[in-house]
Length: 284
Image 1 (cartoon, rainbow, N blue to C red):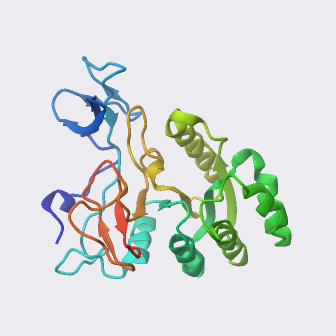
Image 2 (cartoon, rainbow, N blue to C red):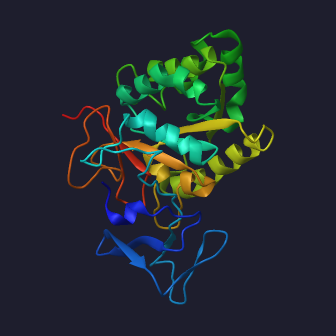
């Protein structure tokens, strides 16, 4: 089963603060338990905080093993990523799926499981690859199914690998075929402060849109897995929304440090500053 710290269901927001401290050009993960307080807004109040030594509020909702999230003797979630997503949607209104841009395994997973997402009550699919200001482009595709405008829009900025743009449009089209609304959430790329500027914007768009819908309407967020992590001066989109998230394993921040997760499997992520779950994918 999971380590004991994973067997406690933590409320949102958490009362533990975590962050990265710069040390000789290397990000070192640190925790504070008595020296800091977490405000209701999810910000850290710390007497000796400074711009060069930020401390990030840790507000990620963590899953707990139990009847609703069964695991085997290795701690692997029975039912794989879909079971984890289902669990997350039972605990909150939405769930975030972290992407590795250019990896068609992930877009194929989304496309294949879109009917299941609909069965789980998902009515809105929020997507990073379209700016919120360009929603009209998405709306026209949802009405006509004509890909030409979307292809032109996504080139060249989202050309992350062979066939990837087509696979992103396949995901959007799969949502369209299931009657799931697709909403763009991004802003133009903003350089070094990408996460610090885009994460609040994504959150605002999602919260604003969902406030106009029924409370039982579910949603998914699809965007780069870095947006589900906490960094200096930044809190992940999932933490901001109070939802869980799953990121597909890589050598990036969402990976488990001590084992590989085979494709089709899922496990709770022991890294509390990152996504709730790690999903397996083919590895080289």
